[in-house]
Image 1 (spheres, rainbow over the protein chains, first blue to last red):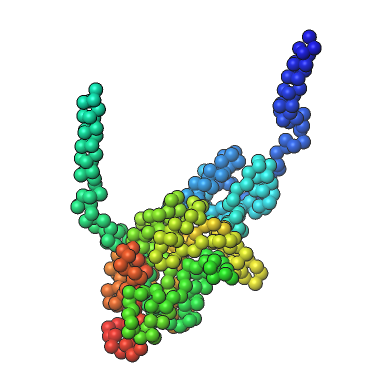
Image 2: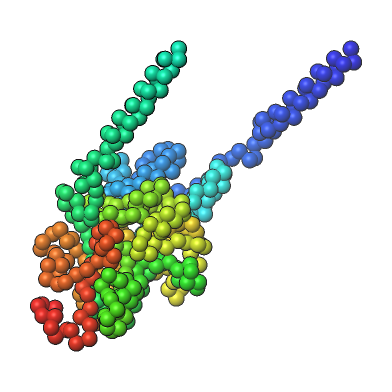
Amino acid sequence: MDDRLRIYGGAVAVLAVLSFPAWRALGSTASGTRPELPLPDSAACVEDAAYMTAHHMDLLADWREAVVRGAETTHTSPEGITRAMSLTGTCLGCHDDHEAFCTQCHDYAGVAPRCWDCHVGGEGGG
Amino acid sequence: MGATRRGFLKGAGLATVGAGLGLPILDPARLAALPDGVRESGPLSRLAIVVDVDRCRLDGVRQACIEACERAHNVPHLPDPAQEVRWIWSETFGAALPDQVHAHTPAERREAPVLVLCNHCEEPPCVQVCPTGATWKREADGIVMMDMHRCVGCRYCMAACPYGARSFNWRDPQAFVPTRMDGSPYSDYPMRTRGVVEKCTFCAERLREGLQPACVEAANSVPGGQGALIFGDPTDPSSEVSRVLRERHTVTRRPGFGTGPNVYYVAPAGAGAAADRGGPS
């Protein structure tokens, strides 16, 4: 009879410890706020905002392949605006606050893209 | 059962011999078609530089070319020569083109400085050894390109290149990139990181905008440097490069290697030879 109490008590304790990350996340709200991104007031982006939020890294990878390895160097947005495929030229031309727009969200998402190891220029460039 | 095993082994042996006899690598037709610096069907278009050695003699001309290149591509100046990064630099005629000199070549000719850079070979050994496809020969114009994003820094290409045209970034180069007075780099060309190989790309990024390579533009803008470097398409008979290749005696670096360089040299006239060179100059 004593053993039964010990076994069930122990099992509950182990489950509680293992599920700690889940119920801790449920209990907290402060760390779950999404970063507020400063948006430029200039013309529309190269693709719509929802697509860019989710897939800007894919778009940039495609641009990289197109410019470095292919012959294509310009991108036409859904609004018909043609721009150069350039991270530092086109993207950072509008999103000029790199720290607030890029780094803040990358820190939040826990990703460390290496683009800026080389693409350091504020204008033109790759 | 013994007979079956024996029969199987005999059959396997015969099959191996049969396959060996048919090995495609021994096919004489295929052997004859192996690259020899010349392809059966000529390329659509090529880009080449002709270096006129006599017009490169002035230090100021060569320096202008080198500096223009380094500023255009943010090439670092590393203090340790073993870690040097170079895209275009000076060699002596004898060192750059050892097939063109012999024991009795006058020192003036042997020691003449020449500009050397990536040869953008027809059969680039660097491309053949690259395990990641980070370097490749562009079909449209024959430029041997570099993709820094794919380079893993194995340096096979450096071992394969017989011209020493490739440099490895042994350390983070960014602190050693020459800058303007205000600390900003001369160019917005992307920097490199430690662990990648870099080299001349015939200024692919400038060609895209309709400009000439930075070294060619610089040579033509320096007094006495006009025509020191001539850039163009040798497959286009009306190009300046074609005219020079037709009218002057030009050589390439280490032709015996079969790499088919696209950088040509108008040999220096040497002491007293300018008079009997004849022809247009």
